Length: 136
Image (cartoon, rainbow, N blue to C red; front, side, top):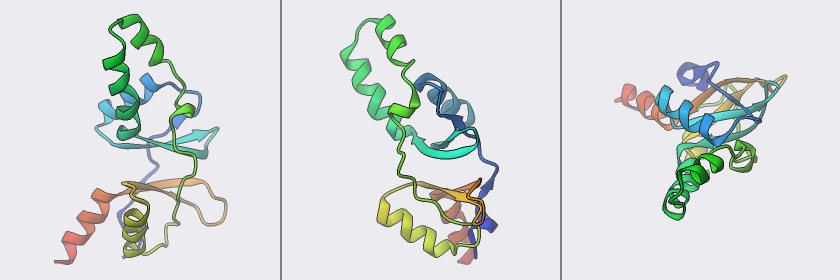
């Protein structure tokens, strides 16, 4: 089985210029855990619910002032995103993707076109687990 069979094509993305609040809203509204970050369509990073939780939980504890929390939520996601992104091509074997996720301790991998490098999809651990259950 290959990634193309299980990936989510044309994933939701955030522009690198968007804020922490934009990312929090998107994750909550779309009920997802990982969002590729792009700069004019080019993949430049990933942000996850964990990144935002690690940023916002200490912020909530540290600041009793709602205005200060709102100000911090305007932080650009470029400051929080993970920019050393591991990607795979659509023809990658799903078992290879599972190994990459385990080795790098990541829950989702952007899928990029092998020729032009454009973001074409995303594959998450849920997709991999769903594919594994079909084998049993």
